[in-house]
Amino acid sequence: MFLGLDSSTQSLSALVIDPASGSVVAEESVNFGADLPAYDSPSGFIPGGTNGEVHADPRMWIEALDLLFSRLAEKADLSTIEAVACSGQQHGSVYLDASFADRLATLDPATPLVDQLAPALTRDTSPIWMDTSTGDECRRIADALGGDAEVCRRSGSVATERFTGPQIRRFFKHDGEAYGRTAVIHLVSSFIGSILAGRNIAIDHGDGAGMNLLDLKSLDWDDALLEATAPGLRAKLPATGASATVAGGISGYFPSKYGISGSCQVVLSTGDNPSSLVGMGATRPGTFVISLGTSDTFFAAMSEPVTDPNGFGHVFGNPAGGFMSLICFRNGSLAREALRDALGLGWDDFDRGALAQTPAGNEGRVMLPFFGPEITPRHDFEGPVRNFPDDAPAPVQVRALLEGQFLNMKLHSQWLGESPELIRLTGGASQNDGIAGLIADIFQAPVERFAVANGAALGAAIRAAHACGHDLEPLTTAFCQPAPDSRIDPDAGLASVYESALSRYKTLLTSTTGAPVA
Ligand code: ADP
Ligand code: XUL
Image (tube, rainbow, N blue to C red; front, side, top):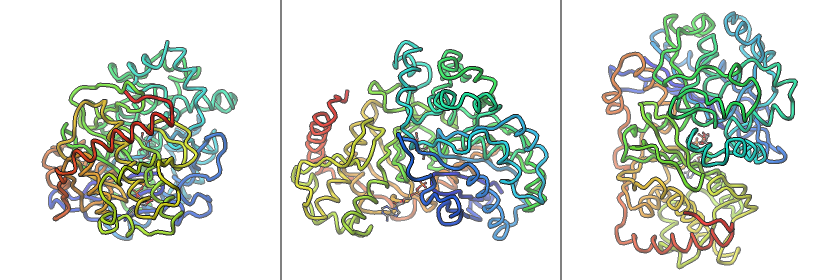
């Protein structure tokens, strides 16, 4: 058996696979808001951050790990687990002092993890991917390197607010003393993996590329980027490593406390998007994945590592080797939920039947679907922008929001120079037939959904098996099959309707933000 964990924005989940029978044998989840209410983070982060700050409490992630294992141990026999791998929300960072390594090495099963590890934190809260507070740092890093094009050429992305490098720079600037006491900086994924391994593990090329610090050619930290970020940073970063690397055996804490096998291996962690690429069976070019979680993301394996001239898209390491593209849309489910709640609707009002009340293209009515700051395109929207009255009937608004979201996705993925042959959907909203059908029509590609909703945790479990000698191909064939009857083919008759809609969308966007899209 192989265990995959995913520490996402809102929850920590686990999935156990048995490659011999090709079955998922257990699934379990801890919801940060509902299960750990003491952290006052109903959506997994601390509400009310100022100046674009969005932070989460890393103690919540640690406490969730004990809770998850205690629930999992009740459900499944963990003594046959050969290896475990983690996935984590990308870019978020955890700051620890020199005692962390010793604390990890001497974990005592009689005391909760959080009590043993929290004293090592040099920063109480962790900036996460929703944070937009580092515009100034991004400019300074880009200036030091001679411009954004150079940062992008080296690291695969322009200096980007949520990326870890600019976040580290801001910490150093605001609290140099605590930065000085910091001995190691982890990503969310490598932090959880290090607790499992009982020692600091390396950062893989998939998640590492989301830091503006990794040189995509050498796959090592880039000295010029390190220097532009903060002093002495190389010494505080773990080594880098290929995703399919066994980091070592599991810490004795977990076998004693939860009955997991003492010979269980810990495989390097990766980011939730690279992990989903594996879990969605999309490690080869041609199949695109759209993940409809808290954020929406659009990603695929790349034939060649091209970069986005607009600076919104990213290049990360593909855990199966080579590279992948990633474009993140902050106003994903957050915006769908905002419109649903503002109009007093339910998800039924986003479904196929409800969408059938309005025609494709919405008779020229267009919405820029942003209820707050957006990453792609980068702009501080204060609310949606409409070319029609705000009080239009609900079905018009719902169609305008969804068409706006996926036209925006289509527009901002054109730099890839490749159209999807097939789209695989994952994340909470992927089960919605209305949303899935609209994606098929806008991209003019068939859409498939999966029985396993958590592609990132599945990807982690598959990676654990792969790193321990199982071939990737048979694993993805066994586990990454679309659910029966989940496929939706595009309506070819709507291709021209959505071409006109795309050009209307682009006109409204460029006139609102003043920034042309190449
Ligand atoms: P994350 O991994 O970012 O924590 P998930 O992939 O679990 O998020 O997705 C959760 C989101 O899915 C919820 O916040 C909700 O907005 C959305 N969702 C759940 N069911 C539906 C549905 N039927 N239609 C549209 N959206 C849905
Ligand atoms: C990707 C991104 C988000 C997070 C959270 O760049 O910021 O998708 O990984 O899921």
